[in-house]
Length: 312
Image 1 (cartoon, rainbow, N blue to C red):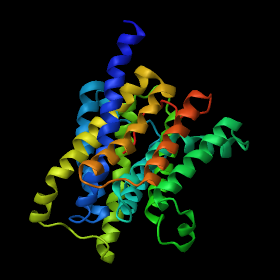
Image 2: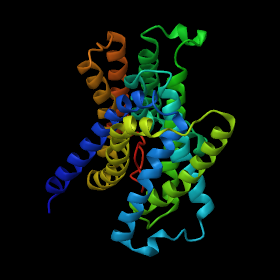
Image 3: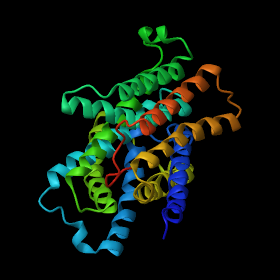
Image 4: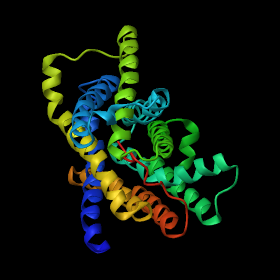
C-alpha cells in the first residue's frame, strides 16, 4: 500500500478527532450548569475506562492489563493526564468561553518545545522560540480582546491560564509515554486512565466531604446524559483511538497540524450559535495556527507520536 493510500485513513481519523475535541468545549460548558467539575470529570473518565479495558482485552488479551512492576509511574502519569488535564480543563472552562478554552490545546506542540528546552537546559532553536512567542501572543489576543493590559487587573485570563496549565499536564503525560517502548497506544492510554481515574475518585470523595461536589440526582443525570454520551464516546474513546492511529499513519510532524482544527471548530460552533468573534479573536487564533505551522514545517520540535497521544 502506498503512503498516499495509507495517509487517507490517517487524515480522516485525525480530522474527525480534532473536530470532536473542538466540539467538546461547547458541550462541556452547559454540562457545568448541571454537574460540578469534579463529578463531571469522574463520570466522563469513569465511563470511558471500562470501554477501553474491554477493547484492550479483545485486541491484546489479558496480559496487556499487567503493570509490569511500574504501577506507581503509570499512576503518576495518569494523574497528570486525566486528573490534572481533565479537572483543570473543566474548572478553567467555567471561567471563560468555550472557544477561548479551545485555543489552548493548539499550543501543546509549542509547550513541548518549552519543556524540552527546560529538560535539556538549552534554549530552543531561534525558529522554535519565535513560534512559541507568536503562539503566546495569539492566546493573549484571544483572552484579552486585544487589550493585554487587563491581564494585570486579574479580570480576565484566569480560565485560560487554568486550561493552559491543564494542557501542560497533558504534554507531560504524552512525553512520559516514551518510557514505555513496545507498548501500544491503547495499552498505555487504558492503564494510565484506570489509575488516573482512581485519583479523581479520591478528589471526589474529598470534595464531597468538604461541600465542593454533590452527588447528582436522577433528573440531573438525565439532563446531562446526551452531553456525557458525547464526552465519553466521541471526545474520549474515539478521540484516543483515532488520534493514536492517525498519528502513526501520518507521523508527528504532519499529524500534529490537525490540532489546529480544535479552536477552528469551537469558533465555528460559536458562530453558528450567533456569537460573532471579534477581529482580535480571529487574529489571535490565526497567530496560534501560524505558530504551530511554523514550528512543524520549520524544523521545530513537535509533540512525538508517543502512545496515548490525545487531547482530552
